[in-house]
Length: 55
Image 1 (tube, one colour):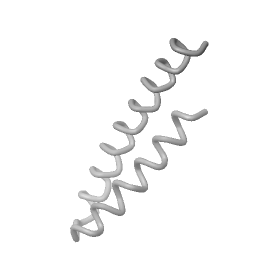
Image 2 (image 1 turned 30 degrees about the vertical axis):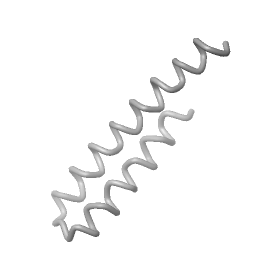
Image 3 (image 1 turned 135 degrees about the vertical axis):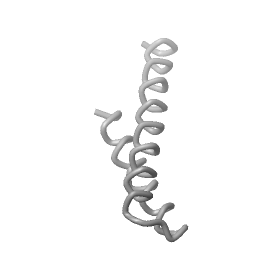
């Protein structure tokens, strides 16, 4: 359940960053998607690492 949450947080962060840079709608969508993927991958690998070390 932590991966979708990380993706949501990443998407929101991406949209905020794009808005600060005064991006248009396409920029907001692109930043949101890229940050969502990046955060989801980080959460995935973090979860795998956690299970390998402590599970």
